Structures are given as C-alpha cells and as structure tokens.
Image 1 (cartoon, rainbow, N blue to C red):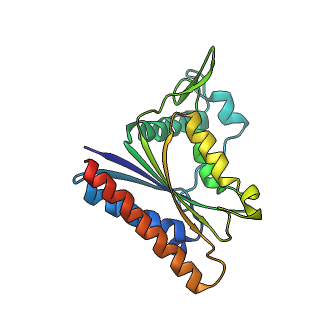
Image 2 (image 1 turned 90 degrees about the horizontal axis):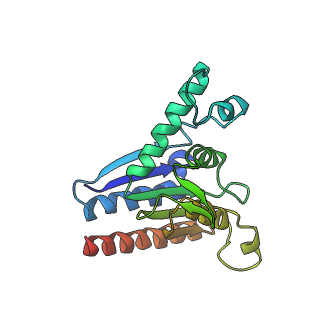
Length: 208
C-alpha cells in the first residue's frame, strides 16, 4: 500500500495558496493510488519545538536523560519513522521572508540525523532516504522563478540541498507565484498550479 506523508507549513491557514494546491495534489494522488494511506502533519497549527541545548545534549542517547530529552528523542523517532515509511512526500511550503517557514526548518532539524537519514562516508555524506518521491508545492507572493528576484529565493536551493542531503532527490515542483499582484493574477497562478498537480497525478496513475 502506498504511503503518503503530507507536510503543511503555511501560517495562513485556509487562506494558504500552498496548502490549497497541495490539498488538491494529495486528493489526486489518492485517486492514482487507491487505498493509499495519508499522514498529515500541519506544522503551522501544531508547531514542533525548536532544538535547544538540552535537546542536543540528549540527541540519540539513552540512559540518564531528562524527561524533556526522553520526549524529544521519542518524538524525533516518530517523525523519522513517518519519513522512512513514506513512498511519497508532499510538502506545502510558503515563502516567508525569502526562505522557508521556521516550523518547516524545525521539522528538518528533527529528522536530519546522522546514521538515520544520512551518514558520512569516506567520500562525503550519503543520503539514506532513497527511492522516495517528493512533490514540493511552493507559494511565493512575488515572481522568483526568473528575473532579479530569483537570486533572493532561498526556499528553492535550501530545500533542494537538504532533501538531497538525506537522499530525497526525486523531486517534482509545483509553483504558485505572483499572488500579491492582485486577485486576478493570484487566481490565475493557483489555477495553473492546480492543473500542474492534475498532470503529476495523472502521470502517476498511468505509471501505477
């Protein structure tokens, strides 16, 4: 049975363009993979704890740990297990101040663990989460795919690096951008993104 992990990160709730398009993407994937299970983590509505000194001191250890350290390790185990089990990862990402939301960064900080999602070898780091498919839905108010603002889009290179670092290199991207330039342009951008999601799910259905 296909397992889908769906991560939402926009703080805009039901008004979020990234969540709207990603919701549709997941719905279409359900049709492409009948019986698929979907695990949803809304990182905006249920934010993760940011890592701190106490968390890092107990990371990956056992024995004499504080109650907080035990809970943090158990929760990180849960997040990593979800990621390891997923065949498809759908990520709804809103650009916040030219980068990813801090809630999504916290998730990455929990799951990027040496020996579990990557490891260091003689020739450098090796990602361990291979064979998975990632669909990124990225919403940006301005135009960052081309032109002078492309250089200050830190969402795209950061996610490409961190996902690839963990072995997640099969990445498809759906972009919603230019939404701050009026309702008409926002609606057009969303419509194009929804159509893109439809094509991706259609291709998946044919492959299945």
